[in-house]
Image (cartoon, rainbow, N blue to C red; front, top):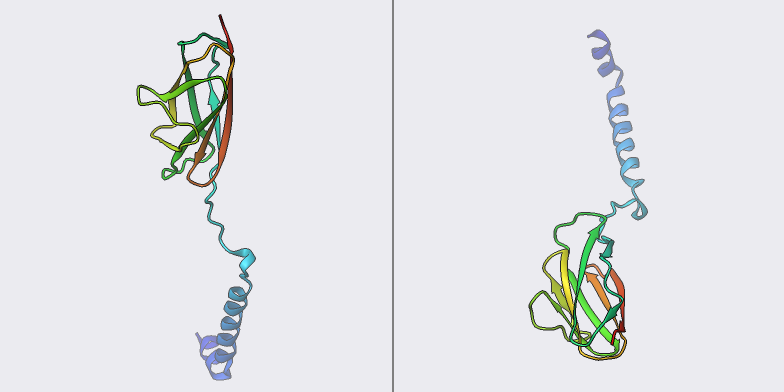
Length: 149
């Protein structure tokens, strides 16, 4: 206790307070913009597709099972689908909903779903499906069906 009282008598208290303020200031100044807290707003994902038939006949409906696998589980992510058919003709739809229009963007309500492609031509058919998320990530899946006469 006497050492504490002597501490005040000597006048070292202002020196210690000054050192504490200087130390706190130095630690605050050392945080530069490069050391800012990074907030992740990019959540990559993968698209898995179950195997589909190689051959299709005109009028045949092919089921395409797709699963979006996230690397990080962020609940506010929205997923979208668009497609473009560049060979042959056919329709692509989500379950029993109306067929998709090429290059239009459709929101996907779930991360595991089925698409149905119905061939409307007797030639080989090819189309791409793009699945994107609300952060700008996008994956392309290509499908090609040979004509089975």
